[in-house]
Each structure stands twice: as structure tokens, then as C-alpha cells.
Amino acid sequence: MHAGFEIAVWCAVLLGLTLVSISSVSPVELAVAGAAALGGAFAARRMRLAAGSGFRGDPRRAARAVAAVPWAVLRGLAVLVAAMAHRPDDAAVRHVRLRPGTDAGWAGVLLAAAPDTCVIDVPGNDEVVVHALRPEAGPVEAAVTRRDGSR
Image (tube, rainbow, N blue to C red):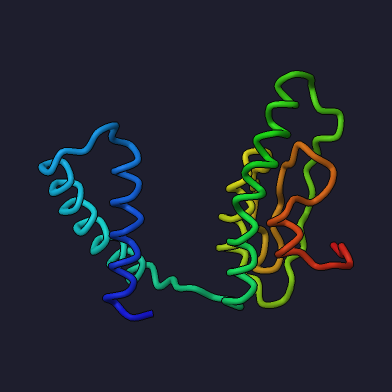
């Protein structure tokens, strides 16, 4: 990934989060948010480089999993609301075996995006342990797990 692209993506994400958090945005607040986002973007890149981390795995698989996140969030909210109304009987901790080409790092982040799923552990690069309020796999889980359900 080129440095300029990475910094632009970080800056856009940080600026977007800031603008969503502010109810009305004045020009001064926009300038301050932009400067802070740019500084945060440089810091995030330096931290990633210092940690020696980067994207691993199949980018097409990651794109499919990212595309499933909005549906997973909506579905997860519905499951969470239902769980608040009555205690779920089918909540479970399960080991999720990842498909080849799926990195446990980004898969864990995407799995945890759903409100009804919590990533508990990442014991290996091909396995994630989740606590879910539903017995069946959600959209993101279906996109990143093996079809045979092997453990």
C-alpha cells in the first residue's frame, strides 16, 4: 500500500468519525477536525509500520466480508433487541474455522462489528473464538468461515 493512499484513507476515516460526532459543523471546526485527522493519519501509519503489521490474506475475500458488514450490523441489532426482550436460549461460544486466504486479524474485526457477536480469542491465524447470541452464522461469519464447518 502506498503511503499517500494509506494516509488519505486514515484521514478520511478519522475526519468522517469526527464530523459524525459533531452536531453542526462550522468552518473552524472543520479545519480543526481536518488538521487533527491528518495528524492522526500520520500517527496511525507510523504505529502500523512500527508494529510491523500489514494486510494479509486474500483481498477479494476481505472485500466480500466488508460488503456483508452492513447486513450483519442490522441483523445483529435485531438479535440484540430480541435478546433484551427475553434471555436467548441459543447463545453460544464457538470456534470459527477460517477459510484459506482469510487472515484472523481482519476477520476478527469484521466479525466483532455485528452487535450480537463478540470475538473472545484468536488462538491461531486460521481460527477465531466468538460468543454469539444466535445459533447460526451471520453474514460476515458465513463469508469468512469454511463451508464444511470443521473445527
